[in-house]
Image 1 (tube, rainbow, N blue to C red):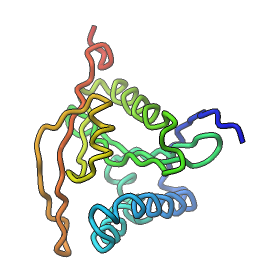
Image 2 (tube, helix red, strand yellow; image 1 turned 180 degrees about the horizontal axis):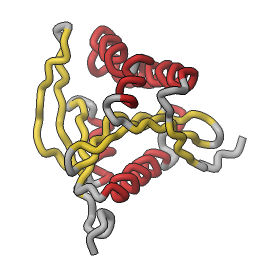
Image 3 (cartoon, helix red, strand yellow; image 1 turned 45 degrees about the vertical axis):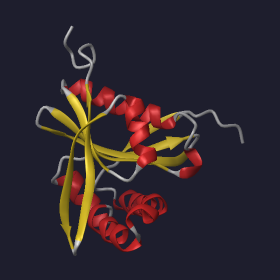
Image 4 (cartoon, rainbow, N blue to C red; image 1 turned 90 degrees about the vertical axis):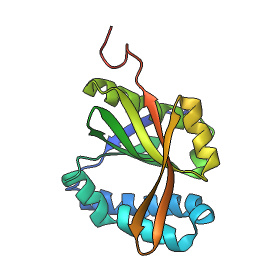
Length: 179
């Protein structure tokens, strides 16, 4: 099969329970594969249940203002993203790409899409939390132009802590509507 790397972003509607269920399962697969070695399967399972379950995704979209998108490449689900405005900045909550689609420039297209959505809102920056031991992903964010603004530890319950860097990408003036 020829890979064209044609990428599209499919919005997730909270009322589409079949898609939300499929997304939850897909997210669990990617997140387990990536984070079990970093934070351990116990904490990872807890976090998936808390943040990527069908109920959690539904609630994030309906009440939290999250915008979830399935990233489709060459007709297949390649990853997913979720973000929402928080104050004057866009919070990038989820940025995941399935292993078989990495190294094809898709992550750059995902980030470009988020930048476009942030610019449409006239927001000044994109920011995110990333596990501080997630070196490969931190390197990708640095490559995109993010910088670390602080470290933070958040108690997420059940004896688990998220030990993160907060990283930020300041929107260039021409992208956020200022000329």
